[in-house]
Length: 265
Image (tube, rainbow, N blue to C red):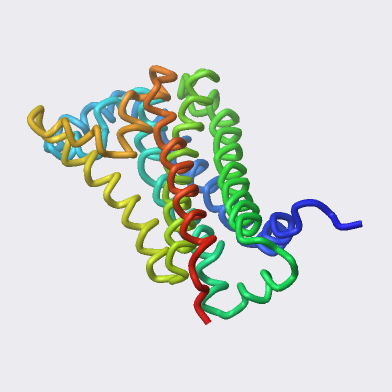
């Protein structure tokens, strides 16, 4: 009897070492940054540091609320180092879902075993998103474990909200890489699409923070959709779900093109 979801299971099994490495990296980043908060925030040194920085830099980095525990965690991890690390993992896995195998000539071998293209795209994409979901859940558990010792004062509801926002943001980069890889079969295009989405999202948010005249840029920034309403401080907002909706659209477009085009030889 054939086991269900063979491509999904194979992707997870083949990638467990990489997933372990990224898990250790994210956990290490959290354990490095979050315990520092009592030394700065609690003693008032964080506010003194903010007062010494240019206001434009503070707005660009979304450091407005960094003097609070939740604001510190959101700005240092979810908005910066966690965003960077998660995006790198997402783009790498997303590029490897289809484009890598097609350029290496292995994709036709997989399809020759009675696998249809829709199944290939769905199972490989699911494997990428499950791995990203694991990183998000692990990050939330580490934050929860460090919450009391680090005097962050983070509540469970807002932590769940920012975890969904974080997943949507990094998964959007993966979705762009998967979709463009399916459309073109080119590794460079898939890599560029995921990276470009992440960089544009961050840049639009940073520029939009500079003045009221530029705030409209937030409407076009997936980074702003995820973090613009400060989910770790204020909880849920409708904008959190926008990235997930865009991912669904990208995957549908990728499938529509992938199912009809000639594969690279």
